[in-house]
Length: 329
Length: 268
Image 1: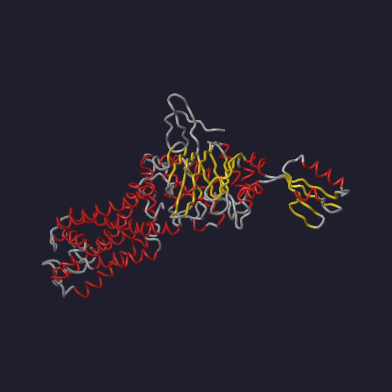
Image 2: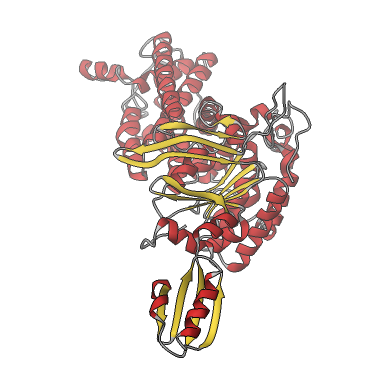
């Protein structure tokens, strides 16, 4: 469900659409054009172009050092690009930074907090920085409830456990009800219960029209939640497609077999892994299964057990960005 | 008793345009008020101990102005010293803590502009400095009579002094990367400039060379102008003090705004 503005002048903090007198159009939630970022000699981003539409649930994946955090910091205005431009809901993050920042909520990766205040106070302050007053308190309470912080609303931030601090951090990014929400590894070090609660809440926000951009170590989360995925490597986007299309085009299916005899030589080229009489074959297409069975029949090798596994995003990830040691999404 | 809280009356009335700067100002005020023993009561006690000890030891030995006791002479100096140190401490400690803890990111993500950022930190610093200075005056009145010959000068130098050191604190808070650097700034810059500015003496009691050196210290003009407001006597003309302090304030405010606008050490 896309969120509709009531009028072209609804240019307050929160949801807004750009309006043209000739034709109405919807600005991209995020539009990145030719972004480069250098830190001295090091080129962290090398010409990134990316457009994320309003209402998308989008994953930004890549190994450590690929440039994801740099890109997020540029979106948030915490860094200035070497070249290129970024627009959030149609507003340039450099020249129209106040509107761009009003449209964005960022959950930082680090567990940072203000030790002087309790959860509810911090959320109200955060909303206040964006121009929201007491009229926004109901939303703040909704966020507190949605993230399971009701019992801790009056607890000082420094007295919260790690998981609760993480929830408060997410709540702070949502306090001003931004149409675009960036979650930079929000589930790092978080238990299963919180992860499920968090995703249920974020999915609800997405269904209400919020655009969600996610980076995560857990590729299965990205696969389950995100409609589109961008994979980054060495400061560039190396893959950008729908999750379904990426899985289809880049990943092989795996055929696991337990055989009574040795693997025929004709099938050696498909062999991915062997452990005793168990072999794993990598297939690019489903139709290859018939060929494998036929070769095994001709070689009089019987099948004791067989399993066909669908590829997952991790296979695509490893395929595209390489199985680097210490790689993460 | 919530009607005693000024924010109770203001929260509903601030327009969305000004709510960002108002919220930051409110947060900065509450930040020091939550630890008022440390930020307000403690400097008042320190100043009163100075007053007690110095007046006890020097009251009968030092006479600065006719018809003004040494204890009375000390009061404006101690008020201004505490006012300056606390205005500096408020903005500088808030910023360095936010930077070290990392929670400054929540401020940097907001649409609050450079001028609003500056104004909110500055106003909160000024209020802490003025609160401490005024409290010292009120408590000192229990022990000694202090005249107020020109209240206008007193208010002008209190405002200018707290603004100057509040601005200085923002600059130091942006510049420092760790608490150690901030402590060095406080102990090697602010403290010597304050103590050597005539808090405890008139510079006329110094040898000519040190008189000339003292006149290079901008803190001297803040204290001398402030003291002129109380006694109608000063080491230099209050207009000269006003010009020096005003010029320094403008120069520091310009530097501070330039640092904030460029994102120096905040947005790399």
